[in-house]
Image (cartoon, rainbow, N blue to C red; front, side, top):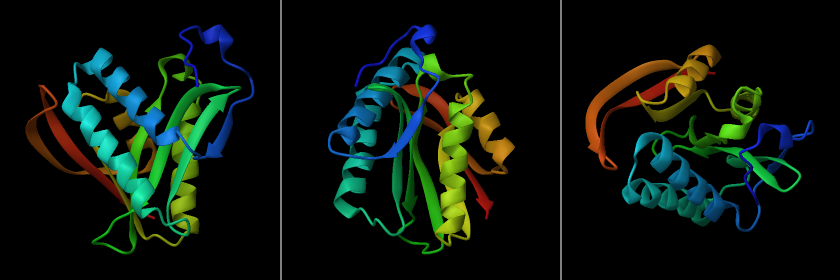
Length: 172
């Protein structure tokens, strides 16, 4: 998959599909590259995303979990995962939500989040949660727009930066 920095190369037809072989490695790579460039995150963040994607594949439950990839042609534009919470059977977790810079402002983030939340409802989850950072302003505004509410926050020094780790959630 290629990532273009030219917004004019963005096709009018964006497809959202389920995951396939190679996607988890690419999700890890794009998260690491983007978060290093935009926020100064170090390699420990890449290790975290690698564990998340590896755990997803190792424990994948096709009845209760999903991973969606957005692309135009062969160009990767974004992704989002819906994972069941191990300790809370009626709770789902959003993971690895990412929109490439060239697709930001196109509505793709809203579409990916809508697919994720709608699917969580269809699968019978009663609650959905996510973890984020205070540094991700656009994402946090999107979460609020969908009805997520900030539930907790903790000052942290992770991935080579100081930030406030946040947990957001909502009832479905």
